Length: 295
Image 1 (cartoon, rainbow, N blue to C red):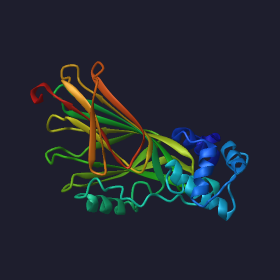
Image 2: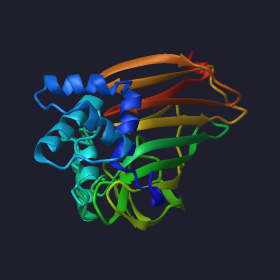
Image 3: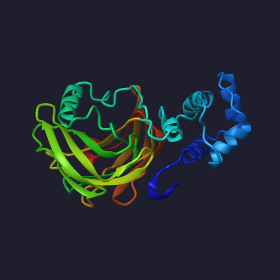
């Protein structure tokens, strides 16, 4: 990785090959089958950073490589051609909230954004969720590694959706990597959008770490934390921390992809439970817990 946190074509290409456990020979064969042949020597040079694809035929192969390796559309292409805007997936980042899409879109429009990922995308996310002795949520700490998809990237937005109209809106505090801009809320849909202004402008491929604390005044016991991952993230980690006086009887982790949920029991260690999932999205990943009176 180059200085300043910028990831190169070779960085992303080599990492994707390792994550998918695909050899250069296997990739060469798959590219040939798709009608976009590339020599083994060229692929080796690209991975080592000795050369980058430049010609039109090579760039067509790069598009195919992104598909084969499960990368974002344009992820390698934008690094091979500096200054080119990365193409985001066509899927709707708010598909999981069909009844709130209009409110989310309107609030983002007020900020001059089409979606939270106009300038940067999340690559890795960690969410820490704290509950009090009543079993009610009091705090969410959100840490994300973001990567620029345009040159001069300065903004990101955190979108939250409440579930109980009796609860006051959340309060946002910048802990690092950015300062808080405007915070907009639609009371009817309980949607809040917080604008995050990065400390430094980023060029395409450069990264930053942002940490944000969200104070919550929950009106009732909570029993679930879920995160909607869009587009595909390298990793999502959720960590729920219970008060020693109120620890659940059991916990489970779950994912929801294309409407299909899969879940499994997870162990509570001390007063907390966590789950990490890699190479995930679009979809929902979450933790839920069951108090004694619900078992």
